[in-house]
Length: 421
Image (cartoon, rainbow, N blue to C red; front, top):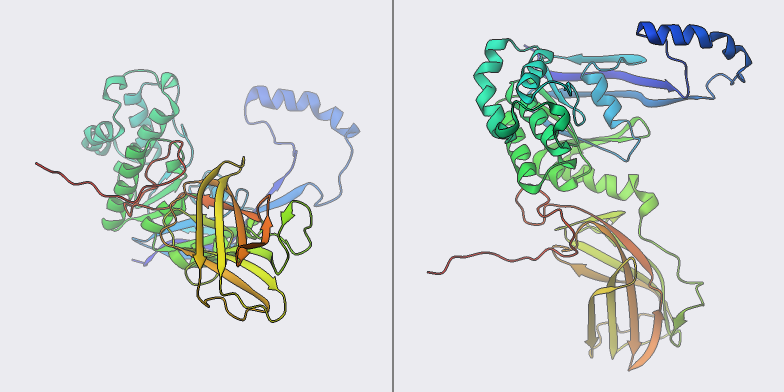
């Protein structure tokens, strides 16, 4: 048996914007026929003008038993790729070879019939996955227990919430023993406990020698679940490799439009200080000193502040600090410190100050960064409106394999529990 579970070779998918699709039902066919004469009066577009490639020459191999993540910005082609692999849509060019039975969880309610009960939908989904009735019955109790819908098992699915849909759909896809499990943003719906169950179940699936293809914007889940990652951008595979390297590549290169860097050198308004030192720019870096566009909760982070200083400037009495605020301007935290020695001695010219943060505690969102520096008690530079912003994604702050609390919050607390009797 081949060691390959999924092989994509020059896989490409082209869509035509606003294209006419032939009718598939009697009603659609009749409507299409009645509208046909009117199309003569529609403006003609040039060849290729209204087309785009959702996927373009994508090639990769995934081995049996691997858990592989696919990351990329919205519109990168991730969902299109999974739909081709799941045989929901056909490629325009290229080939996707699948060696094993595929179970797919692509979006809430896929494969469900709203008029059928939860019980009936379990059998329907199992049949869609190619399972025999005996196989479904053997796993039935496990599916119901995992989905936690026993009370509503005989209720029509149209009355289910999106969370109930997701729990049942994932339970069916994960428990009916497909050789390949394809999952698209399963953690977008559901509470923290359900997310942990999903990750745990996908881990069980992998340990059983089955293959998982996992699309998510949750970098914490990707980092803790997948050994390897494929990075997509504009329909192309731009990089692939070990998870940590690919997440850093994605943050530092693909999301470069969001890099927290702003030119400050020429700013005059809303700025105070005598100018002996001027902040010139700001950026974020990871622990390897590599610029990144997005920070993750729990990572070691470097905030770098570029500067220009007057000639022959000696700093022996420096106060330097930063502030982090909400994007609306509410200050969340401040770090302000005085240095009486010669730590910054002889820094004439240009350079950068680096502020190193261990286990960055902020939760998902966008935050403003401020900075201020004084020399011998006299203010040298303070851009009053701040010097830039940082974008933060959820990360595995607590080392549990999930993003943890996903409600409204700003900071994660780094603490432990213990029992005293």
